[in-house]
Length: 73
Image (cartoon, rainbow, N blue to C red):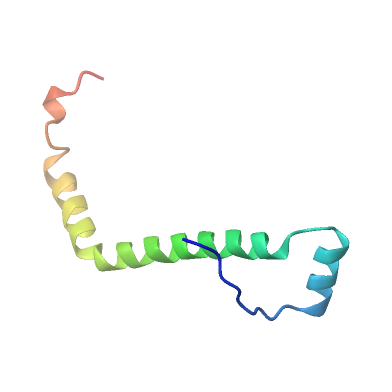
C-alpha cells in the first residue's frame, strides 16, 4: 500500500523543536499512530474476550493447568 498525505495540527513549539533537530515528523507521527493502534486493538480484543479469559482463569484456579501431569519441567 502506498503513502497518503494527511494534515496534522501540532503545537507550534513541538513542531519547531522537531524541525530544529532535523526530526522527520511524518515518520515520528506514523510510528506513534502504529503503536497507538496496536495498543487500542489489544485493549478491544481483551474487552471483547474478557468473559472467556475470566472463565479460563477460573477453570485453571479450580482444576489446575490442563495436561500439567505431562509437563517435564
